[in-house]
Length: 373
Image (cartoon, rainbow, N blue to C red; front, side, top):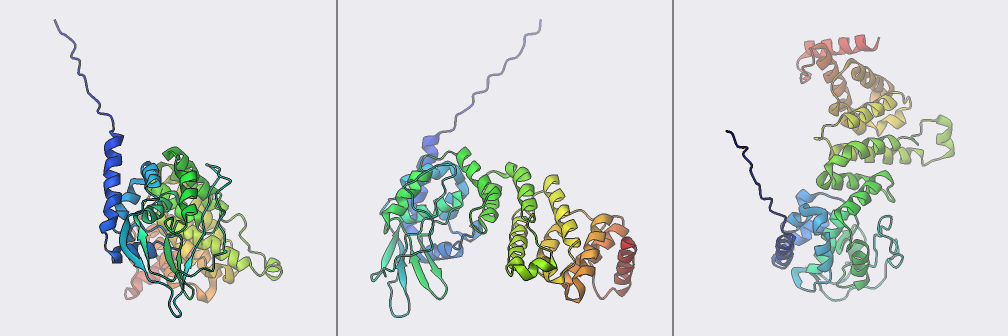
């Protein structure tokens, strides 16, 4: 007689207390970071950049933990423990300002008491050396996770240094705690999606995509194609409109630049939906006839073209772009056209086009001309 074998598996629950303890220990270790490491991390990640590879541990480790440590970070924002980094005071032509800028976000967590982002700075100089605290660094880490400009200290070329640290301006820390202290990972995910779909300032969507890739990669298939398409809804290719609006070229430059950066952020992620959006962009670019427009679209075309699988359709579109661009087309774009043609004609096996191999280059050019006929 056979008896059924029943196996009981014990599932060990996640010990949130232990995780919080580890995070707290890492936060405390910020006090022992070298001043040069703190300075490098803050300055290389300023101007709303999100390059975690340029951060130093333990800051890098804390950023990698993502939304789950946001409550712990908020509880540490008012930690007055001093770090090793000292900001030198204003002296001579070197100016150090006390900044009250706060990058508010209230779409998910309303907070009418939080100050809005403003370009106005207090004119008060910091006359004495100022030492950043652990709470100031936690304020910075929180901003890197939720895609906000929380910079306790950063330099601006030809202006000076701005110190917007919660230890110096307590209202900044109070605003951050009020808006993000009770935020769950799901609410932060929704906030990041809104950053991409409805950005309230330049490059908010680019760094929102970077945050989603790091913390919520499964959302990229839905969010990125939609954003790439909307980036070009107001694309201008009207000769008459150039005369009426002098900002048309600037608008298109911003559109092309941000879309290129989004594609650079997700270059290693494979997605049918994103590829379809890229092909749509290539079709749109190949239909533009004004060389002034195409001049600043070269990087975007290369980003889309190198991502897509070589096909006769793609080769035709890129060749048309080269033709419309005229003599000022980038050599990299010409190389892309030649490589696509080579890949199509040599059974999908791309070859590196080297000008020394004149015969292969000639065959690529001939084949590319054949594809467009």
